[in-house]
Length: 299
Image (cartoon, rainbow, N blue to C red):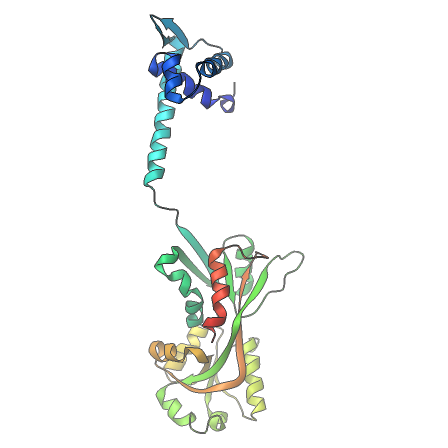
């Protein structure tokens, strides 16, 4: 007999009869008929090839083989009782959300998109991993990530089943230190042709939009630095190295966290961010909340 062939319900009936000393009392304890238990015991003995219970006085006691089986049954059902106690005391399983972030995603944007997940009542343990988009997508496909927050979408193909959902259009503004604001804010944007600029990389959608805006206003671009990492751009910016673009709706956050002020809003320039997942229809409640809240956050 293979281990998987053992019927543990039959073993439970034997265990109850051996402890109670009779089929009648075991039937009362289990809420079953005497006939049902008697039939199951016969099937267990036939399966094991041994007599497990023998008559004595007015009851039944385990045979020599029955005492051996009873010892194992005691351990099995004791462990089962302990398992129930542990599960009754256990806290609800921890809910986790693993998010991949591309470097161009502003950290304040990521925070506001994930803010709902971070609330204690949401009950999530959040893990954030930064990296290149291609690497993050590979981890997403391998189920190492639940979602990727990206500065650009990914188009699904026959071999790549991922789906990008827009997280709003974020109107952009230029920010700088008090000294830079004092110089370039008056008569905005006329003086920007001489302003030191901190820009994202040339292949970035935001960089292309910024270049088009400067061309439209017939202004030269004086590039002081260009970085793929938005956090590094802000570090340079709060040190007074130059002006940089960030969402206009985050002016208060930018002043509080980075000590920079809004120089002016870049009319017609917006940046878009995307939630990329492997679900055609989002089932994960945290992802549903992120996508649903994005339009309000981007205002």
